[in-house]
Image (cartoon, rainbow, N blue to C red; front, side, top):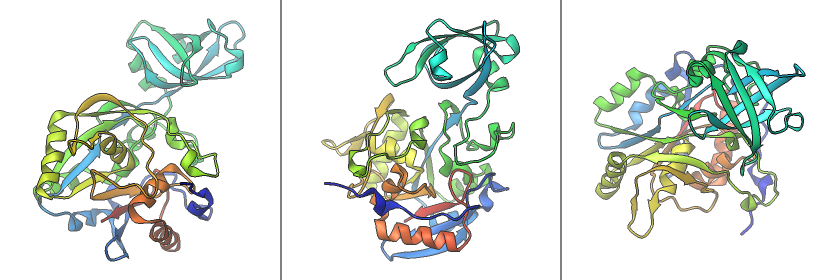
Amino acid sequence: MTIDLSLYDYHLPPGRIALYPASPRCSSKLMIIDRLKGSIEHRRFSDIIDFLEAGDLLVLNDSKVFPARLTGIKKGSGGRVEIFLLRRLNDCQWEALVKPGKRLNPGAEVVLADGKLEAVVGERTDYGGRRVTFKADTDIMQLVWEYGEVPLPPYIDRPAEEADKSTYQTVFASRIGAVAAPTAGFHFTHELLADIAAKGVEIEYITLHPGLGTFRPITVQDAARHKMETEYYTIEEKTADSINAAKADGRRVIAVGTTTVRALESSWNDTEKKIEPGVDRAADIYIYPPYAFKTIDCLLTNFHLPKSTLLLLVSALVGRELILAAYDEAIRSGYRFYSYGDAMLIL
């Protein structure tokens, strides 16, 4: 089948992209979409507890963003260099994007972190990056956290600030490895999660580290021909058992974020009809209409870019007409969009 990408477009007026998060986190707006009724309701995020029931299973992504963008000076020429860390290969080597790539031949040396960190640019990797080897007298990640810059999405049109190292994270982020945050989880506070658990909702965590592919647009008119970039996820055995038990009992599995959906759907064993646990497993699943979801019943998500893979994913769950009507309603109602913006609960 073919999918006309133009059918998944909408116009967002200037100024609707959130540049900073809501404060407190749970004060953001929450749109409730009831698929069975075809209805749309407007609430505050803290009201999400009213739509959760004892026995529900809430699955969140505990991936933690690190300040992946480093700037330095090329030895010899003194030219400015940017090294964007993508994935750790071992204790001292990373896959990274480097700028200006054409001027950094293999063997080029770069000085970073006020001279506390040095890097040697190596050969290209299979995924289009470069292998970069670091040398320092102290822990490399400590220097990355001190001198690196949070790689905010390109649509957040402002320089990254020191505060983004904490605000461009979920409060439950624990496993470092993401260069893009699982933003649907931004709206939770520790107190709200405690209240949800006290209501009898089970809470479990998976890990999927979002990469730069999160921001890359679909460039083909037939969206079905788009190829997703591989990301890696971990689902512990305890978490898989909890999800499988919930499904066997007929209890709702509620995914927080599209990254969680991709991990769960990637882990589904269609022969045995269950989630399989695993560590650092590849997720290159591409979800678009008319995909039949195997693992989730409900989804909490933010508002996504026009003609994006994420908009196609939620359209597969909700239906194109209802999701675009909901986006139109959100625009008319003053919702804030994208990473630091408001949320939507799909029931």
